[in-house]
Length: 231
Ligand SMILES: [Ca+2]
Image (cartoon, rainbow, N blue to C red; front, side):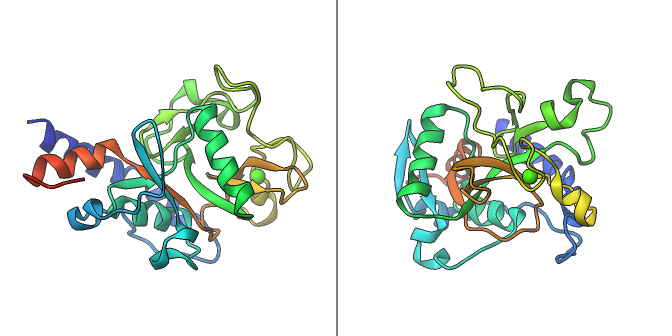
């Protein structure tokens, strides 16, 4: 009985995402939805590195995606077909792993699943106000982030950059002042503002390489609907 419920929840979440349709001046593709996993792709998903039972890959190191730069939702959907999603960085250990990947391979930036809860369904949530401090979460598992102005619990530092376009700490929603586009998605940037490797809020239409991480929800769903599949 759990599986149909999971599907319903997934579908509901798809419908909660329409705000990203109007996310940028350069792309305007209405009616975009989250992709469902493809069992064959899940079984053969790239497993480049591993942390605590989750597999990951960096798009730049996978032949099919090596030169691909995509907007945030396309990044999620490419990952989701593999039973993965954009990376969610809940622990400092995981953050260290991602920062090391970026540093050692001179990657300019990557998308993560970090998202500002500023779409339909996020209204009337006083616990998310002010949004710039309390409104961020990991889309892949819907886990709330720590307040953006402090080090997450059990971390030794705050991964959000102390500077950016406006020379103020992140998130700064800087593009809103430029062209009215909200910076609703989270990327890890490599020294773009002479600030080392750090977290930034960025408008979702920007096109970047990405890191995918196993989605337990999608893997469980495909496992329970495909008898005998090896994931
Ligand atoms: Ca920013």
